[in-house]
Length: 194
Image 1 (cartoon, rainbow, N blue to C red):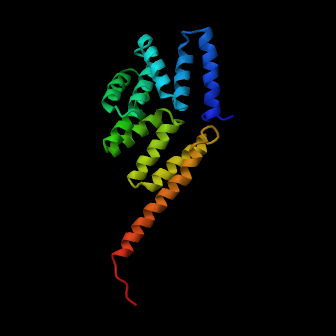
Image 2: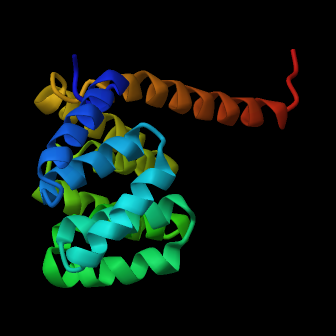
Image 3: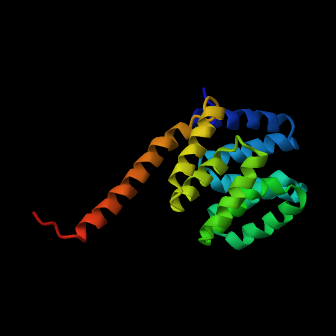
């Protein structure tokens, strides 16, 4: 069973429940449980547990990161920014991906690209940052860079991060559609003579 797939997260949920029944204050089990709940779409339950964990560990970098992620998912960029500002003081490399998302949401693509790149310089196996970097490069029409970002990730981490293997054909298809649109516009504006 590959980690990242729904059965693995369901198993994680069951295991963390057992751990927390025996050790209710186990911080790592709580964090893993929050991640599993989020992956399984149980956002409300994850948020409630995260709020309880935040009360006991308000300055934990992983708590600040998860809290900013939940807020971003809910479209609350300003609230997420407050958590990210605190995270920047403690562990800046953990803030870069979400800071990139905020920049992207504000159409600051070059700034977003910089944040994603910084995250990957510290954590090259970060799937989310790699995926985000790929698609921001795509939006910037830096197609070759987008493709090489995905290919490099697959070459280094493809066996453990299988999801990226699905991104490459989607990227190629998106680029092909862009070129098709450009070619169509180019020929639609010129009259042809025999």
